[in-house]
Amino acid sequence: MKRIDMVTPIGLLIGVSILLFGIFSNSGWEAAMSFLHLPSAMIVLGGVGGALFVNFGWEHLKKLPRIIAICFSKSTLNTTHMVRRCVFFADVARREGLLSLEMRLDEDDDAFFRKGTLLTIDGVEPDVIKDMLNGEIIALEERHALNRALLEKAGAYGPAWGMIGTLLGLVLMLRDLNDPSTLGPSMAIALITTLYGTLLANLVCLPLAAKLEARTKDEVFHKLLAIEGIVGIQSGQNPALLMEKLNSFIPLNKQLTESKLHDRSSEGMFNETS
Image (cartoon, rainbow, N blue to C red; front, side, top):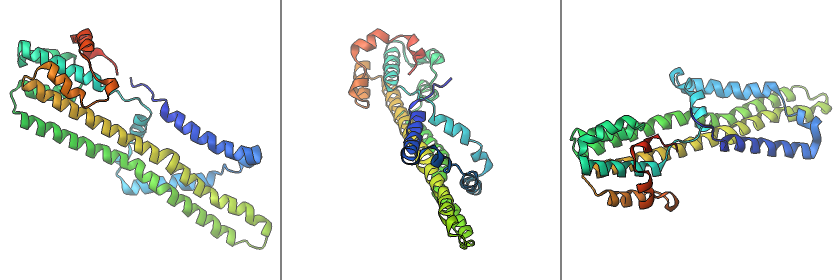
């Protein structure tokens, strides 16, 4: 079960809190209630939803709840664990041969690393392995970009539908200019849709899309690190040299040291959590 990433809900809470503080500090509770307008919300949400249906097919749209859930879950990637895994496998391969790695893969939960290691055991050429795994990375980036496009498009449509709602409100307001006292409240209601659309885009959709993009970059980097390790394992590279090579890919505070390697280089290391 994935753990919740509390940073995302905290960020949303901060944004909403600042907005409410700005309203309450100037006008109090009565004015705050005037910002709640169901027809305006329906125009924005319904318009954005309709535009997404036009833009994407149902097969893609039904993934939206899962895509949003990813934004609220913690990443399970652990680069230090990947370096340790590669160094451990390199050591086993040098001592016992590549074929001995297959039984140790039963404890490995990384499908990408497992696939690359099995190709290595099967004697596939290094360049072929790199091409196959890099092709998988490219496909992953394309899938993630398509999923991210749902939120990016919603962020683009939100302000536009907010403006459409404002224009509708202005048209209805201009139909009744006989009573000047109604102009102010009518204008306020007309502008609320723009507020809703802008908030939907800049507090929810676009930040979540940016988070997904960052997650994709992290996952791609993790897989590239795995490829370097797999190639090192296949070439029979010295585990200490491989560790130094892979350490150069990650920050100093996360790099694997010789002492840490000896403390934890056991088969049980695959049960680590990130």
